[in-house]
Image: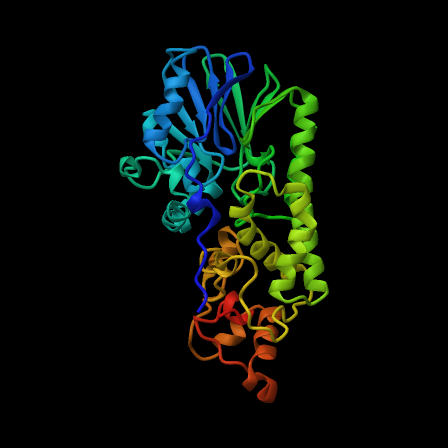
Length: 394
C-alpha cells in the first residue's frame, strides 16, 4: 500500500530573507526570496500598498519597513488578484479603502473561502499567526478596465491589461517614475503558479506590459527588477515558463499520452530550465493539470489515460485534482467564462439529460471511457465524475 507524499510546500518551513528595495522615487518592493511580494507607493499625502500578504501579522512586517522611509498613512490596499496569500493580510494595514478589479471581487465571492483553506493547508509557512485573519478580504472599490488613483498629486493608474495568472489580474503603473507593479503576471526566478491561469492569454498580457517599457518593476515573486534590461529578462523568463508549460501539455494531448507520460514530458521540457526556481515543485502538479485541461479545450479531446490506472506520476499530490479544482461536476469546468455567460452555464448535476448538458468534447470523452458507453453510445454522468475519475486515477 503506497503512502501519499505531502505537497512540496508543506515541508518548506525555512524563514526567508526580507529585502526592501527602492525601485523609483518613493517606490519600493518588499521581497522575500520567492515568497509573495508587496509593493509600496508613497504619494504626497498618503501611501498605497500593492498586495497585502497572507495575514495581518505578516502585513505588519511590511508596515515596519514602510515606517523606515515615511510616516504618511497607508490609505489604500490594492489587490492584484484574489489568491489568499495576496489578500488576507489587508486589515493589517488599516486602510481607508481596498481596491480590486470587478473580476477579482467576483472570484472572491465564488471561491475565496475555498482558496483560503486550500492555500493554508498547502503552504502553512505563509500564514504566520493565521488566527489574526478576521475573515475574507472584501474590496471596497472595484473597477473594470482602468481606474486612476491620486495620492496627493501623484497619479497611479490601475489597469486590467489582460488575463494571465488569473482572470482578474491588474497592474499598477506610476507614470511619473515609469514604474510598474505587476503582481504575479511577472515572476523572477520563481515558478508561475498556473492553477487558475489563462495560458494562451498570458503571453499577450506580457506584451501589453512590455509596451509600457517600464524602468523598474515589482514582480509578484522574486527580487525587485531595477533597470530595463532586468525587466525584459523577467518578461522573457515568465513568457518562457508559460509557453513551455502549455506547449508540453498541448503536445501530450496531441500524442494521446497518459497522465504519467504527460507529467514526465512536462518535466523533461521544464526541469532543466526552471527546476531551481522558487516553489517549482509546489506548483508543478497544479500547473500540469491546468495546462492539460486548457490543452483539451483547444484540441480534440482524447483519452489521456490510455488504459493505465497507475496514479504514480512523481508525487501523490500530482493527481489530487480536487485540490486543483478540476471537478467537471461543478461550475468550475471553465474558469474563463464570467459574467452573464457564466450565469447561463448549465448545472452539470444528476437529472434527466444531465449528461447531454456537458460540453460535447467532454461528453464524448466520458462515453468513450465508459463500458456502457462503448456498447450503447451513452454514459451515465454523476457529480462524482471528475477529471481524476475520467483519467483513471484511483
